[in-house]
Length: 436
Image (cartoon, rainbow, N blue to C red; front, side, top):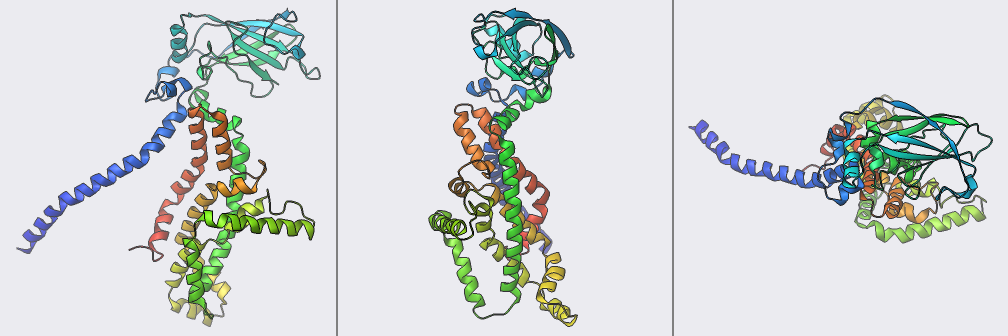
């Protein structure tokens, strides 16, 4: 009889549990939808986004089918008289002109050409100039198709990564589908152009373009340095403060801890102006007394030191340190351990999970910091990637696909950090007295 009752109870609970699972799945889909939209948009061309096409061609086989092998073409050059080439700067004279026939393109480019009534082959006009006499060979190349008044692409110092493809009849982002051109040899009478298709460029064109146009290399390096410095300070000061609150007896300990926790109730906007005023006075003191310029403004100090005292991190670690049995400390005390040695050799090895939670949370907060860095910096020397992304979104304007590529670049490090630490992060939250 009890077994039948238990089975009935389980059966009665199943519909409610199924409904809960359905709600959780629906919530996950709703939460992931903006992220999925951002990823898909970051791979689209400008035209695909403008036409609201749901699926980018870059994730299909359409652009990559039937691509011919790499081909090298010898281009003969002829002199161009001054003023004959409409869009070239007069400072680049004397000029030489060559022509290349493009007889095969990818499917997206073929579609663009067909819609404009243009059939293959199309002629690419290349204007070359020797703007650096000290460098052997031509170092400037202007690419254009069909007309000298349409787009011109300048490739300087071809000795580097000078891959380029001209716009195909003013079709935005069609140059990503190739064929890509690079000059591999040049002399006064001719040069050699290599034609090829690069699937990596086809797929990740927006990311590459956003990375270089927005100077994300500098901003990313700044964010990495600032995050590592902040984490080092947070781990040091939070560990020492949490251990003091949890394991050491001193007058007013509980009152101080309560007052310390009360600071969590203050929004960041409320403390923004007082903190900025303090930084101004500190910077003035360093300039007038110690004769150190910009010690606290437009420097790493102002972007890291104010955030090394993390109230939430101290609370999180204090909750875990309080759960460590007193018998461990008594045994360590008998062996002659001081508080510092007990912390380093006993407490910290046991606190790997909460320490990982502190690293993940503060890493995310430091990486996503925006308002404070924007206020206390005036150039790109130490500005993080969030400020760089904001600047790029204003410059990119209507190029939403490039903005989404930049946003994806910004969050990739955080996703990688959480992917490798999610297990320890979950254990850290579950074992520090925060669970219900």
